[in-house]
Image (tube, rainbow, N blue to C red; front, side, top):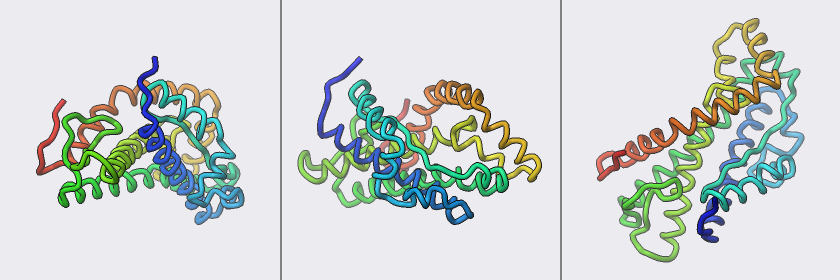
Length: 238
């Protein structure tokens, strides 16, 4: 079912979505390049320019985000960075590091947004909102102008990158979290595990389980992280 569409909010969501998703995939690509696989580098994806990412995944980077905002008031989508499966099979630990680079970049973006929100509150630019939402983590002290834009962009950056971090760390393929064991297994065990991960059926089952699990745990995680960000200030309970 749809909702009242706010063009300003939609534009802010899409700008943050494009930036956050591009950073995520560029981090995968850069890690792979530094570790010996130049597949994504040759595709132009070691870049903060969203164009090569959109060209590779136009449906996940354009169509689905817009449709999800129209239907639900927030954005979801996907992108991907190519890699050499022979390289990944030969160097499973390196493949694990490459996989973790994406969520790590989202965690850093979330921390940056949280730091700027706290700074804005300390400077009197922002204030705690009456209600917390995915696109509404902080309010501007002034009701119009640049502070409103900044509060909206920072709220979305905080929530969307927390979402990308948490969702991608769920340990089911094809999500990045499924690669965590590659960092700790022996070479022989990692190769066997990597072979299992690449089975197409595992991806379908993994996405279904991950989405159901995410819907259960994410609201509580979001509230916990917001309360942590606001330690020492008025905070929010369930």
